[in-house]
Amino acid sequence: MPTGSEVEADTDTDVDVAVVGAGVVGAAIARELAGHGLSVAVLEARDDIGDGTSKANTGILHTGFDAKPGTLESRLVREGCRLLTAYAAATGIPVERTGAVMAAWTEEELAALPGLREKAERNGYRRCELVGAGEVYRQVPALGPGVLGGLTVPDESLTCTWTTTLALATDALRRGARFLLRRAVIGADPGAGVTRLRTAGGDPITARWVVNAAGLGADTVDRMFGHDRFTVTPRRGELLVFDKLARPLADRIVLPVPTARGKGVLISPTVYGNVMLGPTAEDLTDRTATGTSAEGYAFLRARGERLMPSLMREEVTAAYAGLRAAADRDDYLIEASPEQRYVVVGGIRSTGLSAAMGIAEYVRALLADAGLVLAARTDLPSPPRMPNLGEAFPRPYRDAERIAADPAYGHVVCYCERVTAGEIRDACTAPLPARTLDGLRRRTRATNGRCQGFSCAAAVTDLMDRHRSGGCDASTEPGGTTR
Image: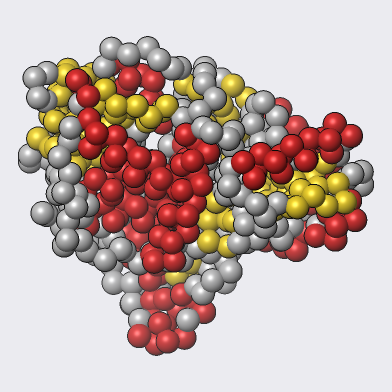
């Protein structure tokens, strides 16, 4: 088997399996299948992996305690959480187990808590505890007045959705999978033994099997295969991110009592050291509408004043929005069509980050049952070791031994996030390199701090451009401002 290839290489487009979509789920599926003696290509409409729904995930590694019991989602979130926790330890993906508390603010919400604990137990999670208002305030003293009680979830954790997607994709690449970017699928022609996928960005791709993990576009791709079994509605979730100085106010996740529309507005620390408030839940028709709104900002400010008034006195570092793939069904849709050699992976909500590796194993089993011959490889490379973006774990700028070996790791370029010239070099020269400033931000946190790139964007961009053109040595280039 090959050990990887240039991302844009396209000299041989015939593959055993084509995976449509390079989000966290598509990357996990590609990694799993590339471990079984198959040629795999991943087709992505955007110019980077994880640039769609995955990049805007809240970054919570869910236990699955509040999933609907008996559903496929419940099973795969639980299994995926276990798999991702172990994979994170092997690859360096930051995971911070903060725990969570669900706060009830009304008598109706308080009455719902015992049922939620029972649901958790039916999902196989037995560590939730009902607590009184005093214990809720002991755990989160900054909460506003009026909490009546709560439910603790000690194993809810924080992680980095960017690093998770990149790790899975890099692992898939090292196992021989190919990532074809800017290759939106615009048509599918299933034939005798092979499917021809027409793409907007290049020649058609022919594949013996196709896995549709296209996220917001999964229903559109599904219809290309003649099905009409679900519709994706883009659900915009807006969030406010507060400066790191706010972190002492929220050292664990504060969950609302969920409703039929979702998990509601939460307060959560992030693995990067910030505090996050959100998301909203607004159903749209435009699948590209990732802009923030004045209405969303006002709604979150009002909710924040109720939930944690002192948080509203802190500085907002950023406001952003992402689109979740809300489907007209209450469970994941993961089904095989053996006669078409096709699997759909649709309706994957925000729990997809936690469930991704469980979904990948489930898809592999479906393909095997549908007739794809799978032989586990015995020559797999070791998992990649990822750069750490977590604030609670060692970063290069504080690693004296690493700096002594390579001074580029001691040269800070982005001062808000303490990102060094060495990290920017590594991100630009990696197997799946940063190609844009946004891509670099997701790989290093550069320009992601309180100044949002005001002080460092020019220097960061210049350094990135030099690395991409091959004309920069990070060990000697200044690569940053002097103030």
